[in-house]
Image (cartoon, rainbow, N blue to C red; front, side, top):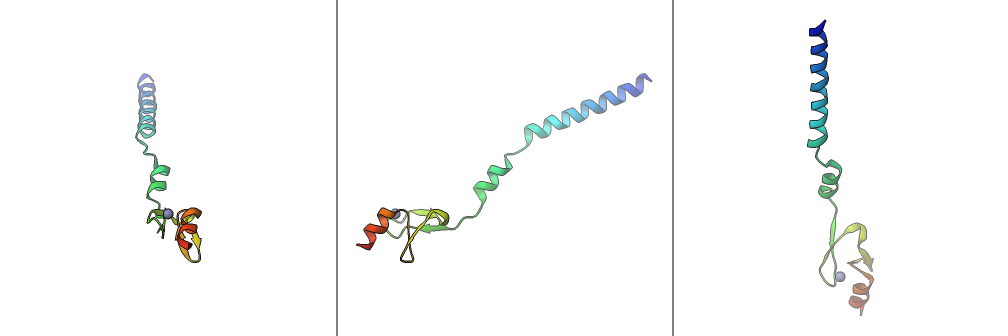
Length: 75
Ligand SMILES: [Zn+2]
């Protein structure tokens, strides 16, 4: 009976250690996915800076980083 309780205790300790190891060695996966997510980069026609396609400003089919550069280039 004593041996049985000892084995159960050892199993519980092993599970706890495994859980702790998992908890501390887990890499920040969501952040890694965020940084490696491919996003198309467009170059500002005026200053040449690279801007993600989601925040690019298109004026007459040309990409710009901001309204100011679009206005300056159209002059
Ligand atoms: Zn620009």
